[in-house]
Image 1 (tube, rainbow, N blue to C red):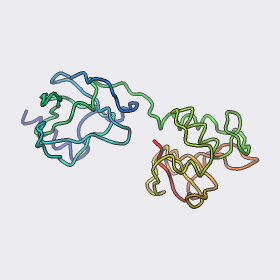
Image 2: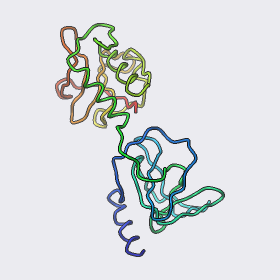
Image 3: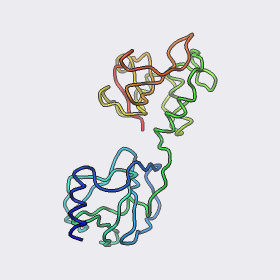
Image 4: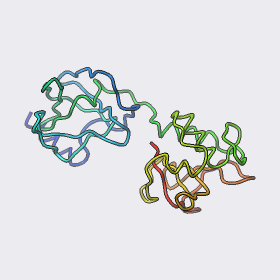
Length: 228
């Protein structure tokens, strides 16, 4: 156990041990099925966020300053029930609330971001039509409306200005795949696209052009909005 503790704590400085990149849906509201000691649990919280690690399962516990990301899987070294709540020990004095986990390693599934980007890429080459919201033609905001609505069920609005409020504003330097990118000042934007990673965005540019992928450096956006 001493060696396991040493290995776990050392690994924590580089992001912990475990199986990363496992995507789930939204936060579970189901009753937790407690894992057995020596088994595996998967963090089921909110994509892009994580759950806190505490030094004890007791009420006077202290936050250790680290979190486990949603969708990552971890081995259980101990289990304790305090005031009716189950806690898992992940090695040493590192404890997490079992409420935000599911028992076992969850099979990899496409995330909401992956689904949005995949559907957006399926629209490549389709023509620009003013006011078009698909499925055969789009304008810039209509394309964003279509992919978010059909990939995630989320209605972000059908025009650029309402879409500005579909999530949290982020700087261009902080963009992540799946973010909306806007041109123009907030409240008066005139164009929108979808950031897909690697310095590229997908959009419906203008009449006479089909949906395409371009580099951010070719037409730098003003700001981004993180919807997912």
